[in-house]
Image (cartoon, rainbow, N blue to C red):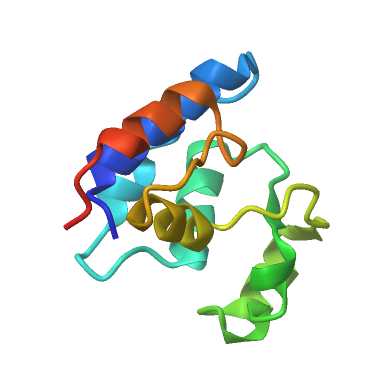
Length: 125
């Protein structure tokens, strides 16, 4: 997996290219990490504590929805927050992007222009 700061830079580039004023990078995950990652439960709990009067909805894609029962404290998540499974509208996987980059193939149709250019120049070794 790429470095957290680099992944955040990529997300920022994607948001900038998408020109979605209501999207924002949320870096709090970094403060919760214990070098093994952060569970969805811990992150949702943290966000709820920051915004105690908000009603949160955890949005999940179909690939993770099928594995949701294996999430840490899945039942507790369902009891405390809304969970929304969204259909996949653009079937793009990071695996496909990595595979194409490894073969020096075009990825411009899989992401935004700025991010595609940065990924083409990145060293993933």
